[in-house]
Structure formats: structure tokens, C-alpha cells
View 1 (cartoon, rainbow, N blue to C red):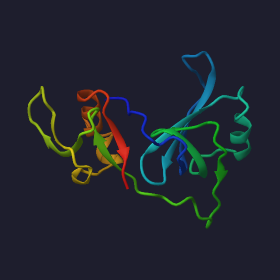
View 2 (view 1 turned 90 degrees about the vertical axis):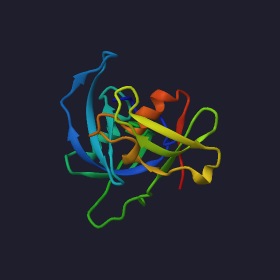
View 3 (view 1 turned 90 degrees about the horizontal axis):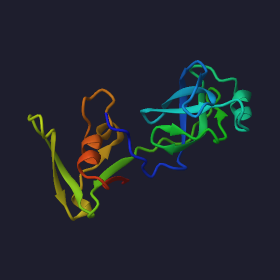
View 4 (view 1 turned 135 degrees about the horizontal axis):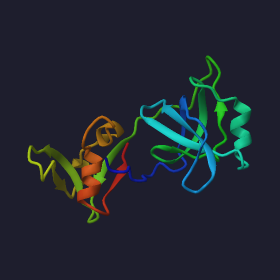
Length: 173
């Protein structure tokens, strides 16, 4: 599956629930860290890596992270990565979280044309056919799940970024 491109999610604050805390391991950079996986309130998953040698670790340690704990004020670096430099806050029972905003995306190729329609193909060489339009109002709106399904063998977002290098998904509505 293709790696998700970085979209205009940087600095977006989210609320998420700790879904998994993995055992400490050594990363490719030689630094030991703990990976924490989150289930985002608006759907989808995100992760962060916490290293006890970094200053930001004290913020996370003070929370006493547990599976099922809901945190707010988490800043995204990209669609699936929580910035470890966030200032997380534990959400207490009955306390309202940050508002969950349903995001939609339009696919735009490097020439500024918008995807109007996606047609599935049954051939091995071509998995999807994209129909384009110059008019942004005619562009198809995709949810995050439509672009990046972790269960699919191929995804609209993956096929688009593979076939149209330089293309991007822009936030719309």
C-alpha cells in the first residue's frame, strides 16, 4: 500500500483515544522509543513515538497513559502522525472535546485539474480510471476513508498519487 501523502493537516488539533501502547524498541535512528497508537475521534488512526530522552516526554509521562484514555489538544504532523511536541490534555468524563469536523478532500493533479469521477477497472494494469474537470465545483468530494482504506488492496489516494506524481488532496469543506 502506498504511503499516505502529507496533506494540509499540519497543526490541526484533534481528540483521540489511546488504542495501543507498544513495548519500547530501538528505532532506525538508534534512539529507544515507545510507539503509541490512537483512534481519532473523527475516524481513522494515528501514532506517535515517545522517547524518554526528549524534553517533551515529561508531558506524556505526567498523563499516565493507559489504553482507553481519551486525550485532546493533539497536534497532527500529517494525517496519521501526532506530533510528540503536542501539549496533550486528558479528557475527563462528561467534558466536551474539541469539535469533530468532518473533512472532505478534492484530488488535484499537478496541472490544476480536479478529479470529477473515479471508475474502477477490472484489468491488472489499470485499477482505476480518473475523469478530470477544470471546474472545482464539479470535483468529487472524498472522505478520508474513501481515499485511504486500510482494508483495501488498493486505494483511490494510493492510485492517484502513484499515477499522477505531484498531485495532491486538498481539504474542501
